Length: 130
Image 1 (cartoon, rainbow, N blue to C red):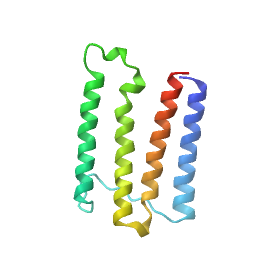
Image 2: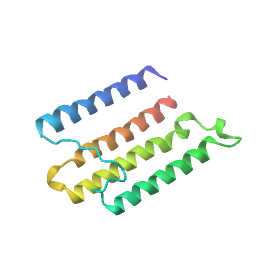
Image 3: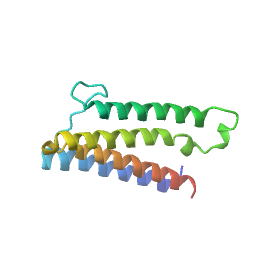
């Protein structure tokens, strides 16, 4: 792994911690309440979408990491379903929070986490081909 990739990852996670802990929680007063995927408080459609994302994740990980030619695929591409899982689940939960509890603004945390997952994948992808 290149030094620039490591520096960029540390920078992204530092910005994430600063925004999440200091700006969202302390300055804006937005608390993060993590809820389980099958929590009773969640919208049923959002739970179904999360379940579909999980099934697609398992299928794509199985497809990319098994087989005779799986060693020919780059490690970043083989792990891309994991980034996709976290990106899409955080995005889905953020959309659900925005539609159901808009005034609490907890969706900011989910959307920030989703954005960080996307940027992290891009950094790994570009860093592999430098």
